[in-house]
Image (cartoon, rainbow, N blue to C red):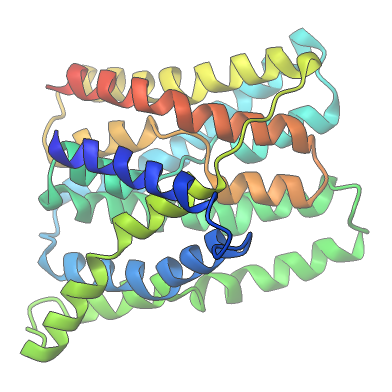
Length: 304
């Protein structure tokens, strides 16, 4: 649990940096850019070559897509029953199915389970969450955003493939898969290890810096329902499904834990940029992050 408390300290450092004038408002963006282009690819290059291919890998690869389908149908049904607006419904469709599986998922899995579980988290994030973000979320935002015209939809569809294959972590994933069984030169291995070690501190400091409260009274029901689905129902569905099928092991633990992550910050940014219920999305992401520091230890207790 020492690693968990270190994460809390990193968050506190980020909040403290916000009060230091030398750290400008662009600080989280700079830190996140370094993580996406340097630290996360280094972690992928470090962990994926040691991954042993087996049928277990299908669990973190397929479950995110099954959850997406289930959550979409659930949100549409609840929205019809509670008479939510189209703006709120689409915002939830963009944000809820996708968890914060990298920026929060990797540090939390490392803290609770250990680094040996990270390769499965990388599969969940890259094959599931990231591809869904680049395709499903982008398309929804393009179709339903009041800030876009119909011509933007075609552009987004054509840009999806390039967005995926030029994304640095995806490039690193391809390289790492090709390098399986081949050792890196010692200097390169040392460089990769040290860059990968910066991922957790930088991510959590950026999160601590950018965290803010946001709430709008008339949006209470979508926020309450959304967080219940994301933090409790989704991991419960995975846990119940795996238990009923007699599945267990590292891949299952990681998949349940990743399903329990709060709403993805990047998906929230897409919804906010598209002008889809920005205040509600901000509250959903912020309160989800805060609540996850209670719900994630609960799910760890369930798994252990």
